[in-house]
Image (cartoon, rainbow, N blue to C red; front, side, top):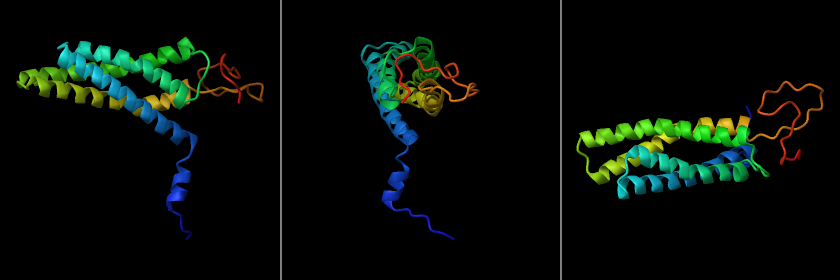
Length: 180
C-alpha cells in the first residue's frame, strides 16, 4: 500500500487547477455581490422603509451589474464584446431566478416578523439574512452553468463534425474571443 503525501505543498499544488482557481474567483465575486446587495437591501428596507420586495428588487438589479462584469472578465477571462443572447440575457435570467426565489423568501420573512411583532431592527436583520440564504441556494448551480455552458470558449474542431453540445455552433468562435 503506497502512502499519499499530504504535505501542505502537495495539497496546495492539487488546488491549483483552473476550475479551483475559477471557483475561488467566483466566490470572491459572489462575496462582493452579496455585500453590495445586502447594503442596498438594508438601506432600502431599513433607512428608506421600502417594502422587502421593492428593496430586494433594487438590491438585485444594482448587484447584478458588477457581478456580471467581474464574473465575465476576472473569473472566466472573457474579453471583447459580450454576446447578448448567449451571455448577458442568461446571466440576468439566472440572477432574477435567484431574485424570484429570494423575493418569496423575504416577503415570507417580513410577514413572519410583522406577525410576531419583531422590532424594526430585528425585521430588517431577518430580511437581510433571508435574502442571503435564498441567493445561496443558486450559487453552486450558477457556477456549473457559467463554467460549462455560458463562459466557454469554443475552439475549431479538427474533425469535420463536432457533436459536443454547447452554446455555439460546432467549431465557431464568437467575435472577440481568441482560439488560444
